[in-house]
Image (cartoon, rainbow, N blue to C red; front, top):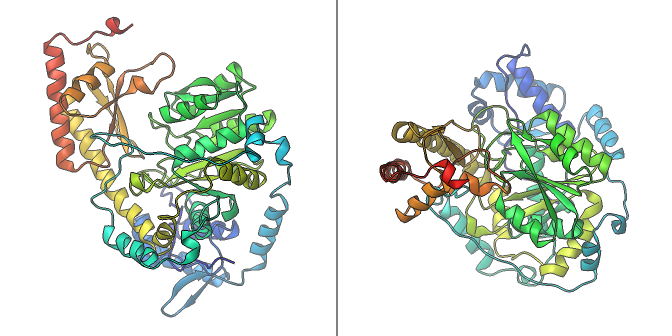
Length: 510
């Protein structure tokens, strides 16, 4: 049995100040639900009352009252000097709820009936290898690297690799380093509301490889896949490489328009979505749409690939559970990455698959490239278990929220006459759209900015079909406040130059 982490986890809870329920009761109910659902394991330490009060912006007495009630009802235990922990011997109702949930879990399915023809062929074929990335100013998804805790990270690297144990320098598990898979599963259950065990987690060389692995295993050439339009070009590339027929679907304020998918391609084999923060536009998929999508997948026997690329960074509203946590039929495959949370060169991501798919996809993984490089995996495991990972996310949340505010203010100050921009509740980028009649085309602005040493992304580049809006996708997480302000001033100069030279009309583009 893996050891229970001794560090207090991030908790996916929030208080609703408009609710009739007292705040201490809300905190109690949410922690109790996490224990009942198995997202907080017996023996797991809870955050200190002071730390949780700060995170929820409530008084410490509110948290103390919730902790007292958890203790009184047998959900927690406390020892002097070791804080509050989930009880190792849980009340009967917890055990009853767990056994009821376990009855519904993991229906054994024959992999031969699930995998695509290509997937079945890969089960008996031979192995292969992987790839790399780039950066730039205002690049979406580029994190702050200077504030990363390099001192702690380098000590951990030295600890594991000064004199590494023999098993670390030999061939390993194609699913990834098991202690890291345990740490990822613990994190996803507690923070993202996933229903998963370590054996369902497959460590990959980034989210792109995770998506590619799922597509190779489950899609036959010519089968259809719904994709968001606009959406992430990397997903389009992976699906095209697997000879998938792409079905681009519109996105509105509730996320992917599922009814359009059912109308255009009800027989699609997969839907690839970013429900927690649509890329690049930013809306969160509504609960109604999530349930609609899950129902379509259940009825059609199709798959949903959930790309959860930057869910750690949420600045307003309630914490959001992943779509996978709502799935009771084993139709959702979940992909995540550490590149945006930590630094791109770490090249580590993960795939969380339904139990019936875990063993065959790991075998396919061995066929393709044997295993993800082990060098960073034990270091990342300790980084998560020691609490540095959660602490880094907390610091970056505050920093990125401030940088987003500065970017929005700078755009409104210097470019308010041509660009409309609103704050986003989450993520590492915002979209600024051109005002009607301003006479500018996003791709032309991006090209002119590149000549002035500014890396910008035009919104139209994210569309597969005809764009229905024109704008710029502006990353801010990896830029200092000075760089943000100076960059927007330079962009204002570029746009002024374009307008002075006559700009480019919308009609010229069409």
